[in-house]
Amino acid sequence: MPVYRHIFSKQYQNLMHPGERLRFDAVNPLCILLLSAIGLLFIYSAQISYEGNHWQRQLFWSIIGLGAYATISVINYKLVLQYAHFIYIAGIVGLILTMPFSPISYEDMGARRWIDLGITRVQPTEGAKIGTLIMAASILARSEIGTVQDSLLVVAKVAAVFLLPMLLIFLQPDLGSTLVFPPMIFALLYISRLSEKFFLSAFAAFGIALGILAADIYGYSQHLETQREAQVSANADAGLVKSGEYQSLIPLKNYQRNRILTFVAPDVVDPSGTGASWNANQAKISAATGGLSGKGLFQGTQAQLGYLPQAVAHNDFIFSVIAEETGFLGSAFVVGLFCLMVANGIRIAGLARDRFGMYLAVGVSVLFLVHFFINVGMTIGITPITGLPLPFLSYGGSFVLSCFILQGLVQSVYRYRKDFS
Image 1 (cartoon, one colour):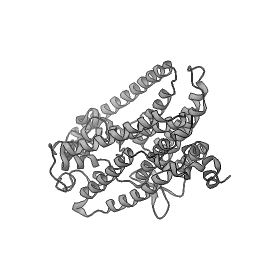
Image 2 (image 1 turned 90 degrees about the vertical axis):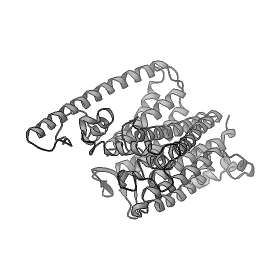
Image 3 (image 1 turned 180 degrees about the horizontal axis):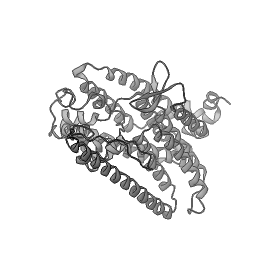
Image 4 (image 1 turned 135 degrees about the horizontal axis):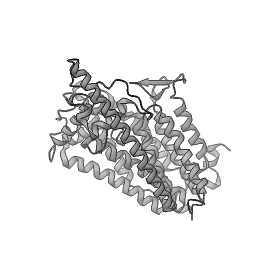
């Protein structure tokens, strides 16, 4: 039966019931509107010196996103459960279309993360996040969870659902987006009351993986030291180390290793501070020089004078622009809005009367929390630079639209929470 018939069938006739309009959570929409307005303002500020038009594109996608939010929030999320497989498959197909063999894949700066539709380019990674969350939530909602032994098949299904898009995204390559999946899967499994033995085993495996990564990064740092010595012996400029070829079994790109080293040992990869660590250093300067109340709207210097590069000031490091121009008070306001939105999402998960709704709301909240923590963290130097954008604030059409869709699902959970026992 077509989707529109499902929506207007007796099973979903409460969609149009006048009483349903009273079921509306105002907290998250208020946070969304405020964050979107702040994002538009500071994207404009970040590009005011060279009259960029990204803020106009952001406005367009925000309007489209608001329409998507309004539509999804009035559709019963149980309908999403019925079509979880199709939504997930669509997300995977989108990722496959970014592969080199695809005629519509688009490459930029060595990464294939987009598909070119002619009139615009979209990033299928964002749709894959939505589809993966919905599919995992549907599997857990339909399954009985107990001990690890009793739940092995369920855990294997959930793991497969996550691993496939993670692999495809990693191959683009997009390490930052790959990193948002593990916290989401562990959050969903945790609230499903899986045995503690599973998490102990998972954390042990994580520790081993982290050790392997640390060994790889250490080997890479030694490689850089060798390169530096060769440059010095050849009377070359040793200010910026050229990495050359580095052989390793870990499938990381050198620029990804540089980002990690920039966080843990910046003097090794970029002694002069003019290479791999430049963006991180300028972002911290932006945040630190804002003081209590900031330099004033449109008065920031790091982005407008080009110290914080134009390519990143309006997306990855938009929080730096906010911190410089509004200071601690403005930054705290933005952080407060995010905390309120995430906390309210968890509250809505607690109000849900079915497991699927609970898993959806928790998954969305964790996804936003990971994006928020990593993005703000890399701005102030407590997390590595991964390129993860800040929801509703960073520039990006596909990402903005996905944020509105995800929050629309949370609103739907709140709206129809009383329809299921």
